[in-house]
Length: 116
Image (cartoon, rainbow, N blue to C red; front, side, top):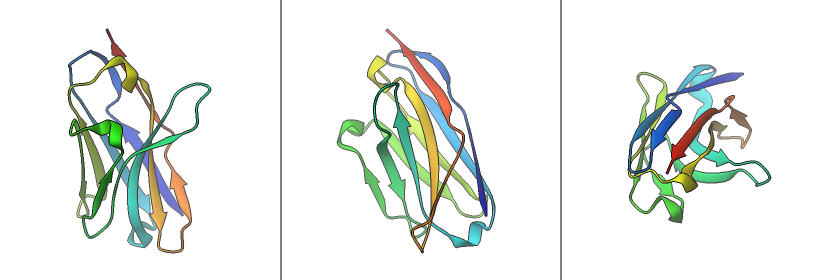
């Protein structure tokens, strides 16, 4: 079992920044890829960025160099630094931990709201 807890969401003005954190506990040794996803009402959850244990990173096209994903394996924590936020980034952001078997665990989500 893996438990994931997100934090760091909130309300920010357009152009501002937020840093999200995802703390992992439980069978963390089994986690390979971690990622951030986001979802708005009526839409499917979409990938924002992923990072493997070895540090291989992928970003969604819409990130456009504004977001940075990182991972501190010693602290069992993943981060998402979000800069130049715009209202279209408003969503619930979810953390996901994926095992080498493909089994995934989700956090409860943290709300990010960007005002214009």
